[in-house]
Length: 149
Image (cartoon, rainbow, N blue to C red; front, side, top):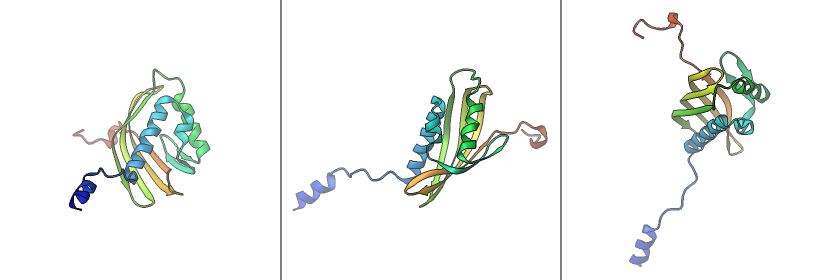
């Protein structure tokens, strides 16, 4: 009996369902890969039809308007487009999550851009769905910079 218990204890545990944080992280990493690949369907996947995005320079409402923002992004590339998130942090509850990261973007008509990204998600029918994105870049306006910068 003890040997059967020991054998059972030594068996590897079956992998558990992926944590909500890991699911959100994977969703964002796959989205970024879709951007780098120019895969519009992949970019739009997992986004709400009534998405709200704060982008530079405009506020974007709805999935159709969101899709249109990518026209400018992919227009007149200066090389291979690369959109790579790093320092990705995720906080997830039962049905709401948010993530933030820094992104290095290369190859667009804007050239090299370091940007910040915040994504808010809601779990709808068991699937994480992006309901809000906020893209920003560090300011270069002197009036907002301290003299120590």
